[in-house]
Image (cartoon, rainbow, N blue to C red; front, side):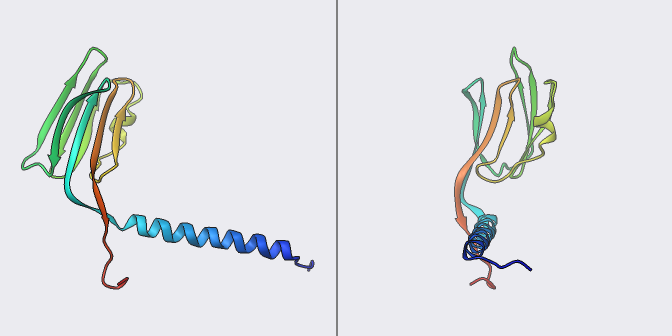
Length: 129
């Protein structure tokens, strides 16, 4: 076995610290939940198209038709999903539903952006306390 040098020990220590720090950061970030009002902002061609708060009392379907294309959204409870789009790549449709602040659905060909805004708080369970 080769001799381990001081620089090797230093590099291994740095990598371990970065790994542990990243694990702690992503664990805490995963515990984030929202507090207060959650707002949905729908923009079409960089202009605000609609704005409402979540959760919605009953399911609603939003159809956005522009000269660029057509998008169909479904809002149910506190979830938003892009059901259909006539764009070629269908990335916005396959993305799935969103429900927490700072999540977005973007349809670049049709220039439609759905963004959830709201405050987050860290919620820790009783075991972590």
